[in-house]
Length: 425
Image 1 (cartoon, rainbow, N blue to C red):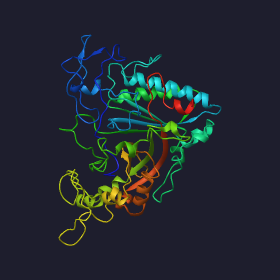
Image 2 (cartoon, rainbow, N blue to C red):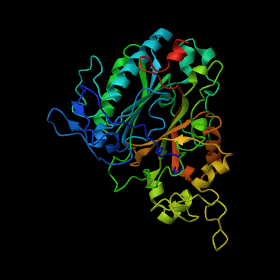
Image 3 (cartoon, one colour):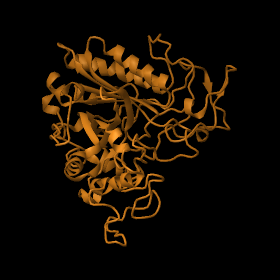
């Protein structure tokens, strides 16, 4: 788990400088500018926008915004926000390709307005009044069955093959897969719920909710300085996530722009593997901290590998202790998940923790909403999960209970909607 979720060290964040906002009239002082806002989901509030209507200024967290339009959809390479909602819909009986296009057009227009801090047309909910956009992102994807139900089977990507079965799976089909997938993230819970409510309402008679999952991360500013987050096992989580600054990042995470064939519409897009992974926390907590560290391969206090150094020190898989044992155990999570152990297989892990109450035996129903992004899941997630399935010491403390694979198209320009190249091509 330590190597399977984290926050990409990149932000498309911009200062919010719009006219009439759905929440308040904002203005940006020239002395503050874009540089006065810290990345949403990574740092605390610093700097502020100046309100022209006499109200107190919003903090950097509230006024931070991420553009909806662009080459790639927002919510992939951006830092994961403090609050997240994952939803899957099935098209309603009788809903065809035309109905799907109309739905994506509505959803895209709404997401663009919300991301810019404006009120979508016809929105009278009042849910997020007075809040800024709070780094809101809304991301859309298509499941394998979407192409059958819209008569677009010939354009279904070859990489959207069903995921293979894994021995650790205990999947609930009712909470897996789906025709349409939506990921919502924001640094304010009301802003995230506002988007969730509008997306659900606008599905109307075109699509029916199949499942929903809600997650969270640390709130911006909760730590003294920006740092890698922790998961519910208390482990620093996401140290070895690929960095957007890496020269091969786009190649590994996004479908190339010159991608041809029947799925050329996927250029600039990515594939998302979504897994609900319950952590057996009562069992895990019975281990001593030293034993937990050996299972992971990192120190719990600061995330440094047991081979030595600090959190960001490269792991030395060949390091041997004075007694002749491997510093990083043979079944340690960071060894089994490492790209070196998987022929270079790479994913961008962007996850949320979840807690859905307690089970009948009193154990917490809690864990990780795991989202892995890659250009090809058959070369990213699948080989790594097969390796983890066979030899990861952490696997006996986990249960994979829901799963889905979705084709997430590239972003759209202003005046367009997500998936337009597929649905109108």
